Length: 258
DNA sequence: AACGGGACCAACCGCGCTCAC
DNA sequence: AGTGAGCGCGGTTGGTCCCGT
Image (cartoon, rainbow, N blue to C red):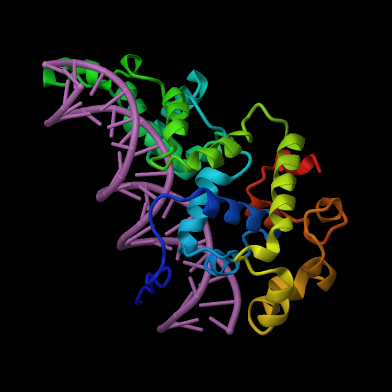
């Protein structure tokens, strides 16, 4: 079978995400969910591959992500799970709420691998170079990076916003933050390059909105109305379902709060 | 103070799986 | 059964920062 490219590469942006792109993606997914990653960037006004959007959301923008240092318990768990599971990072990540496979993978390759299988000094390994105690911890470095913001100073603001979704925040706080963000974004809908729900509904009715997403669970009033009001998240809402919350990246625990 | 090498981590790439047709 | 679209996963890359010299 011939593999089709994940997207048309021409004209698509690559590299570090800008705060504006983060904002668009967050606002869009907060409002509409990730109904189709491939189509999503088009409707969200992003010149990105859908895959890139998914990765950005899953690894960075998701609201219930932990940021910062791995605890001793987490590190121990990763080591144990890696012993039994191998490089199945997504499975390991599933055991560590708020951690992404990418984050765990990076942490493993940069730090835990050396803990799990210490390399004898006699083999020429420079112990000091791999000893993070001589360097800043990951979390400290991350907060440092928030100063220079992942190679883009302007990214910092967005990261700080993301960091508001820290494990210290309650789910309801997270929810309100998300809603605030969405409402803020909704207010600027008109001047944004995002496609408004109305536009999407009427202009692409033959394609996107006629997909099962619309036929099965969508009601026109939800398309036109702001989606992030309490009705949207109420248990009566036709939106509420495992699929939706999976697409939002909410955990089960998170769902119960609604 | 400047520079080079290593560490770190976000993002990309390509493969494989699943599902719908 | 064959095909293609979509997505998830794991490996790899590339940019940036920090530390040692």
